Length: 276
Image (cartoon, rainbow, N blue to C red; front, side, top):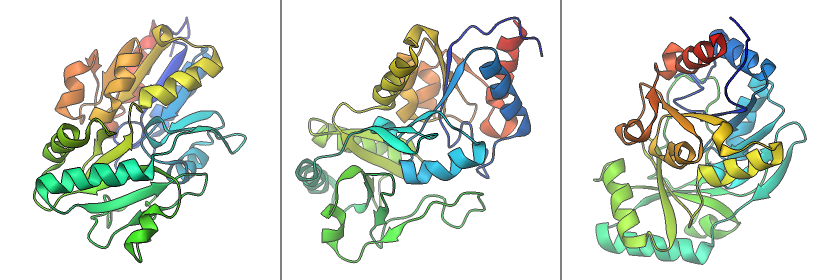
């Protein structure tokens, strides 16, 4: 692999469905390609919808010591120092109002909430279908069962997860934006994962903060992702690459499409760029 130069100073990668394979591992080939790009002068930033507690095991597995953008941009986390650089919370009164407007339109929702902080738990209602539950993964996602509805609002939150018994993810997200988009941000982050966020918050928000700390501009960044919540990141970076397994909405705005997360899609792009 030639190292005559690398055209970007920043590589931003989503985790699930992008850097991580289906079993939550990262292939040796992708690890080697990222390491070569870093050696060539680029910084690698993980940008994920996972909150810090759900991200930290992955970062430890990767021996990642830099800055990670977590919680859809709400949390900028320094993995090496184990501290939050920034954290944005969702106003709980606003969240309750948004939920009431959505439920008035389509009926009851199944809910989960992500609490803020380095050890913030994800509290899930009994009827909330936990994405990935029962699948064989290296890093299963921990949930805490809601005991009573007041549990949801007992601590500061980064986001609220919503599901509907009848509507699919895309349709649910569209309804939520239409009736509550003036109150909260709405992101579809994965199968069964529609999120309500602080208004205006996106992955690009946190990524721009992290990049500024590194002295890197958007015109020097390449981004990889797979879901609609990666769209703002693609709009911020000069070049956006969607995985073959990506949602059609993200592919439509991507500059390129690479192989899937299970077929070393990131490595294929980085190797080509490193070869010059």
